Image 1 (cartoon, helix red, strand yellow):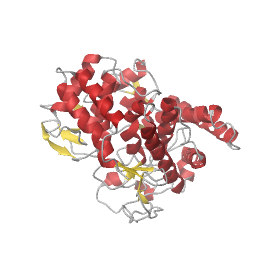
Image 2: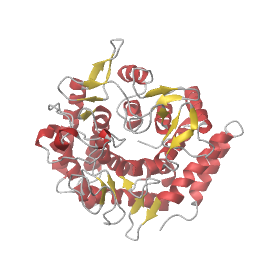
Image 3: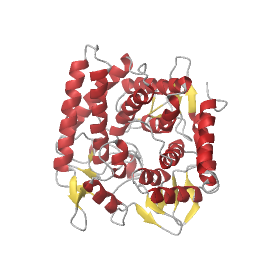
Length: 433
């Protein structure tokens, strides 16, 4: 069952945002209403068992990461709309069903239909669309389960499947602290090097650091070095969520104590790994966070447009927007020192190895806006986003800084909802954390 009409609470919220935008920002309101409605009307599939499947957009599969970001802005309404909260709870339940099928997979089919990348050299099955292991694919569902509880008080999503999924996520995080002992490998027959792992599918060589290894970035592109720093930051945050859930809610679970101990140990290990191994020097000699490291002395100075990225650290809850280390990192990443920072005739911002050179992403622009305290900067970015939508009133994956009519992905729900969240943020409407 899909939404055929906009729920009353959602329409009221869109009307509220339109009123706040007024005449001065009428174009924000137009795009907000189009994007906010689009996700419900085009991507949500509610199943009879109470679970929810979310299409990522123009690909017929559900990403654990994207699906969380797609519904996150609805949490501010869900506390007043039980049916909307049930839809989001159903998504959490579906996400953990998938994690229990395979905690290494990043994207799944609606049915066991064998669609997707079945020819990849890894442990595929008919449920899996793609099996690129990314830390954030485990972090995002945990985040959504927690935020649903914080914003609505609901706990039905914290069921037996959730508990089993948490155990599997913790096991993977622990295993990947020493990737040399991991069973996971991934290779794809392709000429695109970003879509496969080197070294017989094991990725580049790493040494243990305390952090947990990731094969791929949130862009679904391969990591250059195995320790993806922003995803490890995200892991530290969600491990704290696990501690809170099993301390305050799931206290009667027979495995609560063991889960708590493992989450606490992992959080401490990963945080120490970040402190000891994830820092590097920029061209000015300032200490900043690296994007990736390998524990062998190699580090990359860059940021990608997909979240978690380094720019997103305060949004994820890892640090504050005024943290000096973060601000030094941010300044570096919003400069030519970041190889994916592009500036052209119409726009400047962060792009990705996933899209052509000189293409920047609305997701990255929205995140730039949500991690500054400067209201004028938020306004500048919102004006830029509506001016570069190629007349569609929706966000795309990436667009050319010299010609916004050149863009990738006509339909990309994650980007739409990040724009909506920035509009909400501008008017001080935020998801409770």
